[in-house]
Amino acid sequence: MTTSSATEVTEKIGENLPFLRRYARALTGSQSKGDHYAATTLEAILSDFDAFDRTVAPKVALFKVFQTIWSSTGGAFSDDEMGLAAKAQAHLSRLTRDTREALLLHTIEELSFAEVGYVLNQSEDDARALVDLAYKEMSKSLSGKVLIIEDEAIIAMDLESIVNEMGHRVTAVARTEEGALQQFSKEKPDLILSDIQLADNSSGIDAVSKILSQDEDIPVIFITAFPERLLTGEGAEPAFLIAKPYTEDQVRSAVSQAMFFSSTETLQA
Image (tube, rainbow, N blue to C red; front, side, top):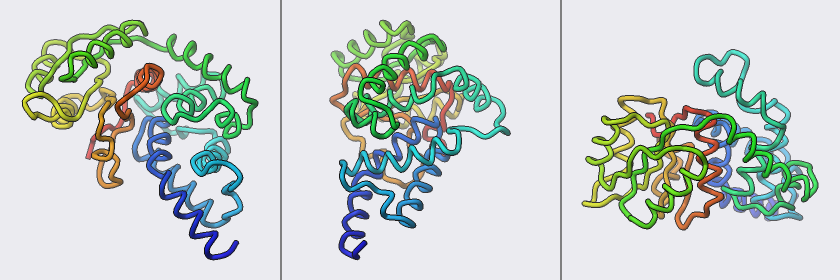
């Protein structure tokens, strides 16, 4: 490969790296584990540029290399995991192979079924079937209580409707940081859906951080119009992040993933 071609590939990888890191974190439920897989993917490409398929979209090519590494290691956790991580691994063992990957690739990363099939070495029809199966299998894993932190009434109502239809229960809807902390003290949720910028200029990030200081095992999904504020590559980042405007499928997918793991390293320093 020529120097100019290598530079072009490197630039394309850089443009899509935030998406890979988001996908890897959501897939593993962990910032550290997800970033480890993302870094390993980059190392594999840099050592062999031919591994990066330039006949498909750069994002698809990047995810294809990741998937090769992910599947070769068996995915997610090692045998020495304990506690919540071990519990998540037990859940994983009961799922059909590639279902969670297909769900995330199609809903969160917005790959077409044909592209999902390419990444997973499946046909387009099989990829579609995997996504349908993922919803069915993960919906049976568990249901729980959800705290919504969102100051826009219409969005809050929409999120509450989606969550309820999935079989979960919304404990409360908070519009401010103070309100979120008050609602958390009244009833502990199993999951938090939070915007970043709240009413009265308070911060969803600060609210979540204070809640996690009391209970670090509550999974959190940030839904925000400003994803760049949390995807800087510096410091702790959320394992689950959806950009506004979102789709119902994206919310359903993220909620299923977060509930499935029942724990994440969201915003822990």
